[in-house]
Image (cartoon, rainbow, N blue to C red):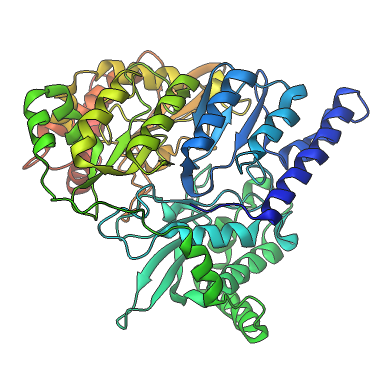
Length: 552
C-alpha cells in the first residue's frame, strides 16, 4: 500500500497545527460557530444532532493493521469505544469533544492518516473496489490510479471551493463493486485490442434528491492523459456549475441541463487545450513509481483445492454457511477473499467496536499480509487469505461477533445514521434496519431468498443509497410523524438502475411487514432460483404493488 513521503507528512502535520489554533479560538469565543464552520469542515468535523462528528479519510478503502489499531485506540480514547464505517469507505467518530479534536488528529497523523477533504465543496475521498489486487477479472489494480487522483486532487488550488462536493470512484473489473455510475465522475479501467490500458469515464451520476446515472463521456482515455481529462471535466463544472442554488449545484444537474452531448463537447475542447499545454501529461515513470506500492504480496505456490477447507466445511455447518456467503474467488490458486460482515442480527450496520478493530487488525496481520479493506457497503474485506487458513480466520472472527454469514443477503443492509445522529435526517434508519434483520434472522431463510440488497436512508440526501437498493427505504417526515417510502429495482453495479417508487409510504409500524410482503411476492413468482433483481426486471412493479396495497 502507499506510504507517505516527507511532503505528505508535512502537509498533514501543518494542517493539524493550524486546526489546533482554530479550535482554540472557537473555544475561547474569539470566533463564532458560523465563522468556525468552514474551518472545521475543511478538517472533516461536522456538527450533528447531539455532538460534533469527525470523518476520517481511508483512501480507496485500504488500511494497514497498524492504522486500524490506531482507529481502535482513538475510538476508546476520544469516542465511546467504536467507529462507524461509511459508504465512502471512511470512518466516522460520532462523539468526540471539540477540545480533543486536534489531539485526535495529531495521533491519527502518526499513522499516515487524516480527515482532510472528507467534507466541504472539494474533491472527496476517492473510492474503489474492495477486491483490488485480488479479483480474478481485474484488468489493473484500481488503487494505482486512485492514488494518483488523490495526489492530484489534494489541496488542488483550482478545485478547493467547487459549487458543491465532488465524488470520484474507480473500478478495475467489469463487475462494478464501486458504484461508479452514481458518482460525479466514475472511472472504469479498460483495455483496447492492442492490450493498452485506458479509462472509460462517466460523468454526472449521483443520488440525493435528484438521482441520476452518469453519462459516458469518454470510451478510452489513455493512461498518460487521465489527469488532463479529469481536470477538463472539473474546469467545465467549476465554470458552469450553479452556485446560486445548493439543490442544483452538483455536476449531475449541469450535465442534465446542457445535455451529455454539449458537456462532452465542452470537456473535449478543454481537454484538447490541456493536452496541448502538456502540463498534466502523466509521466509513465511516475505511474510506475506509484504502481510499485501496490505490487502483489509474496503469495505461496498452493494447490487451488484445500483439504483443510473441505474438511472444515463438512464438519461445521456454521462455517459452511459463512464460506457460502462471505468468501469470494481469488485470482491466485489456493487463496480466497474474505468478507467480514459488520451487520450482526439486530446490530447497527457499519458500526465496529474498538475491540473488534483490534481483533481484525490481528487477523489481517497474521493471515492477510497485514492489510484490509473497507467496502462501500459498510463491511470489511481481507483480500488475500490462504484457503487452508479460512477456518482459523472464521474461528478468530467468531470470538468477536464478526462471523455473521450474510454478505449480499437480506440482512446485509446499507443504512445511514438517520435521525439517531444526523441533524439533516427526517426519520430513523438504524432501528428499521435492525428490525428487518431480526425479522429475517434465520440463516436458512436468508439463503432461500438469496442475493437481495436493502438500502435505507433517513432523508432525501440518500446517504444510505436507497435509490440503488434492490429494495430502497427512504424515511420521510409527515407533520412530525416518520413514514417510509419504498422503491424497487435499484442497482449500483454494472447494470446501474434507479429504483421505482412503489406507492404511498408506510408507517414505522408497517414498514417491516411491507418488506416481508415484497419478499414473499418475489419468492412466489421467481423462476429457476433467479435473484430478486432479475425477477423484478422480468415482471416489473405491478405484482409487488398489488400485494403491498391489497389490504389498504
